[in-house]
Length: 305
Image 1 (tube, rainbow, N blue to C red):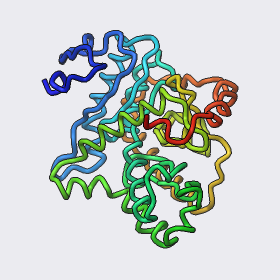
Image 2: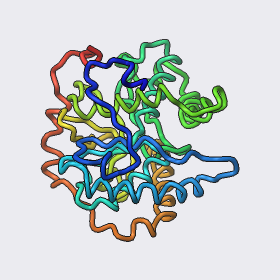
Image 3: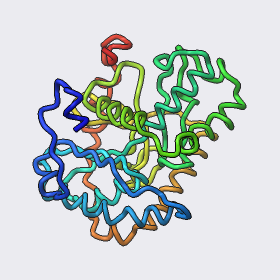
Image 4: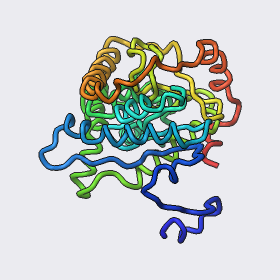
C-alpha cells in the first residue's frame, strides 16, 4: 500500500505472493532482501544454518522460473554465504549474474571518512570493501582518495588503521544499539546504489563494491562470494578491477576476511553438494571491456542527476 501511495512514476503495479513460481516468474532482477535475523543467544553459525535452506529454495526457484537473463542481488544476511548457496542451486545462471550487497558498508565507509576529513562524501573515491559482509570486512583506505589526496595526508594514520576500520565493521551494531532495529533507509538506499552502479557506466577514476563469485583474482579462492572493487559498462555486468596494489597491511586484512568466508562455506557444505564447476566468463570477456568502463568521459557528479 505504501508503494502504491508513493505514486512513483516508474511503478506500474505491485503484487505480493508466497508462491515463488509466481514471484520469480520471468524476473529480470531478483533482489533477495529478506532473511531470518539473528535472535537472542544465536551465534553467526546458527544464523547461517537457519538461513541456508531458504536460499536453497530461492536458487531453485530462480533456476526454474526467472528470465534467462536474470541478475540476482542477495541482501539478506549473511549475504555472501546466502548468495553462495543460492548460486549452487541455480546452475543454469552464470556466475557473473550473482552479486551480494556490500554497498552499505562502502557507503558507511565513505561517509565516516568524509566526516573525519571535513570533506563531502562525493569527494571520497575508490574506497572499496573487500571480503565478507561481517565484522572482518576491510574498507581499503590505502587505495582511496579524498578530494584527490590520499587519506593518510588528510586524517590521522593511527585512526585509519584502528578506529576507522572498527567503526565501519561495527556500524551495523551501532545502528541496532541506537534504534533497536537494524538499518532500514540506508540499507534500501544501498540496494538502489548497488543496482544503479551495475546499470550505469562507472565514472572515470572511480569504482564500487559488491560481493561477487571470485574468479581467483587477488588470491581469493575461486568460487567464494567475496567483495571486490568493481567497474561496470552499464549493461548490468561488472569487471573486477585488475592490478590494484595492496600493501602487507591490506593483504592481511583481506586474508582474514577471506578465511572467514571459507569457514562459512564449510558450515554449509551439505547445501552446496550439488554444485558443479563454476560457470565463468572467458578471461578475455572479463578484462577487455574494463578500459571502457574506467575511461567513461561523463563529468564527475553526473550520476546524481
